[in-house]
Length: 91
Image (cartoon, rainbow, N blue to C red):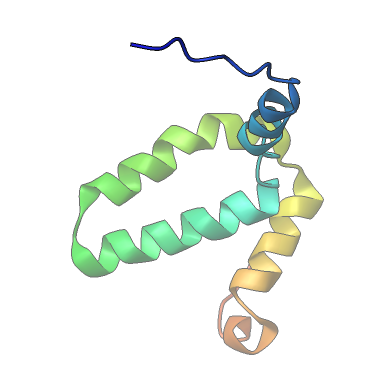
């Protein structure tokens, strides 16, 4: 059996793998929207696993979210026309 000559790697392949693996985490707004979709799916299908997924993500989300993020999320999830009948108390 003949020996096979090994080619040297220049390291660019490893750099490509690192850039693919290190994705930016989703923004708090995107996470809130995704959680809203999961809660809706949990209610419609009566599946507790969707609710459990949301509950697991809340700890990390709570650390990153602030008042403006929550306001933006509510405004995007529930547009103004849909919120007119809902009474919101500000305390």
